[in-house]
Length: 70
Image 1 (tube, helix red, strand yellow):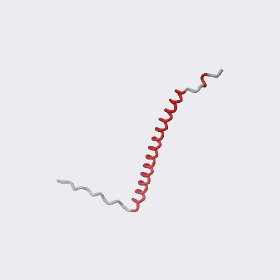
Image 2 (spheres, rainbow, N blue to C red):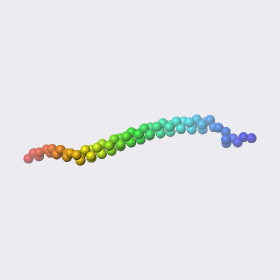
Image 3 (cartoon, helix red, strand yellow):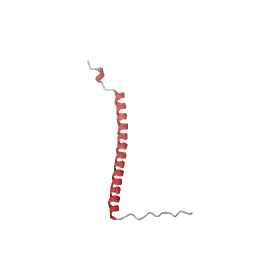
Image 4 (cartoon, helix red, strand yellow):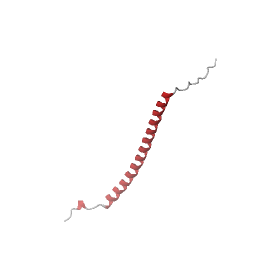
């Protein structure tokens, strides 16, 4: 006699397939957002390093201030 607990359950199989599909879609969106944030962080770091090293070469122009009215 076969064990009834080892038989395949079609309802459970469909439910798990749907859950796996939903999890895959969420995982794809999360990975895409991670890539976007990582690229933005790298670009910002490069910009900051470039600004730092090019700022050493030349002084920044003085800030023009508005004259106060009496």
